[in-house]
Image (cartoon, rainbow, N blue to C red; front, side, top):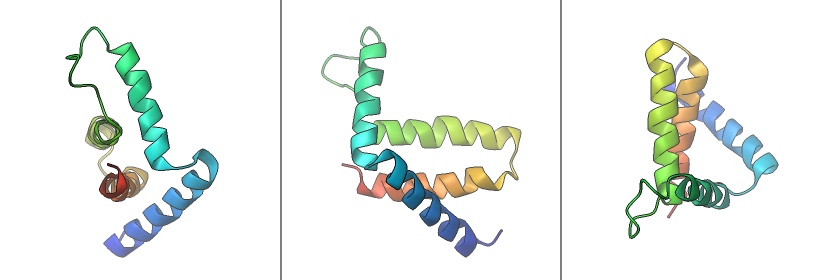
Length: 91
């Protein structure tokens, strides 16, 4: 798939998901809050996970590990492009 098509598909996927799940900023803030509760005994008190951290965890941990198993899977490439775009918006 050409890079323009990957980016176009990522834009469509992000728009569709935002219409279902709401703002990425709010969604990742919620995820960070859950992760901070779950990991409270493992994190430093003055350094909780942020919404930005959650995007990075999704991008790096989930998608990269999936691409190791199936490097040609186009959906993972599209999702990485989408996560990179979201990362640029999240504080």
